[in-house]
Length: 324
Image: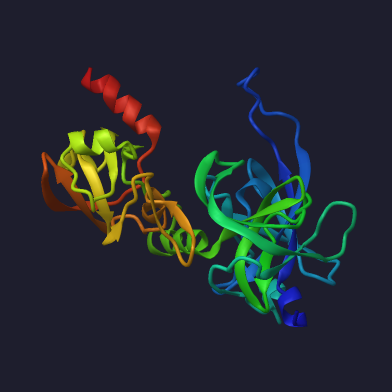
């Protein structure tokens, strides 16, 4: 680990005041929290959203320094537990080196997580091997997104710190359970940052807007006229506000997503000997990107182009009430 990578990791001090849902006319008493972050090109700091959630005041401190600088939250994505901070003081950025993003690590790659865990005030490091790369429930945003799991405990305070291979960032530490740490991978980070760069704010995680069911039962495949070589999933419902509602219908069979065959259990090939749910391909796309979907409808194949946008379940239910 080069010294320059450690010099880019900062400690974040947050004073937060969360809403009081029992007494909604006031907030709860302020509380202090801290976490980690790292300098990113463009004079920005990347951290976890839960580190600065409900923030009233945020400060950052460089490694080896006793001075705290005021920071502001430029954008926070609670779905994918990421946030961008800005520090206006030019003195803070003097001599600062920026970390760059790498790729998705492979199984058994060793990752170093750097941050400021509880129980101390100096920078610390923990290492672990990659045990799996798959969609995981994000505790903060309750969203199922791609994540990296490593065999190492990520203690409170590490959240927001970079996960490194060499001097390249391969993810952001965000949660841990039973000595298994979870890391937000680079594709999710890139989607978040690109959305902020293009629109100035977080735009959300893209979704196809579908609910599908596996079609592993051979009798069910025969009922829908699938040939033996065909695989796919059955569309059971469609979000009324998604672009898919214009082109897809209930009981369509999704055969391919962007040219990638969809298996009968709803997964697609992801690197060597790995598979992920096909809708995760949509979550890694930018808003308004187009996906080409091959479907089987009444025993006839056709292809449709669907514009992907962030669509929430609350939007669906509100539109359903309006229509009814």
